[in-house]
Length: 259
Image (cartoon, rainbow, N blue to C red; front, side):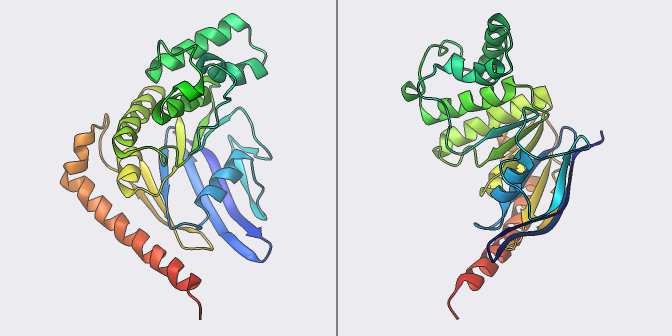
């Protein structure tokens, strides 16, 4: 499989603060890359630039060889907050991007129904977001992102607001969808367990100004079941990454401490 995303020399400066220093990243088709690092290291900034929601101070992003200049249907974004339209039903939230593309209504409904089935929300099509739990709302957001048929899914701590049990169920749900759909995913998280369980590669970013410090392939076979979290291979990789992240968190704390 070839690379579909190329990040080259990417920098982002906010006034006098360098948030992201010259960063390179290659993402292959069907990769599931999880991104770890201390708060403020540029994880979300990197994701937002790939999404076209922010612009780099230097460097470039290319998707399928084309320069990324703004948002596009080829990238589906899922945030920690559910970002659903409260005035639209579950079905119409999923149809939103399809309607913007002016697909016939019958085709919109067919696609929406298929993805609501994939995320286990059959029977909730006419509900409104306020009638759903947090986990269910995030399933709608994932279905909406997938329904547009993006080349990549960009996920910024999508399970960060969920309780522990719901979070683990959502990890398994998303991983199952990825295994079936083979989408390419960039997934920002603070949770090392989540990063190892979900990722085919785990990237660790340094303290600000962020750069990619570690890029590890996760050699745990698919399909993955939550029981892999108790295996020696999982524990060894988690221990290595925990130490790498701790070093960067300490560096960030020392940099923030008053002189």
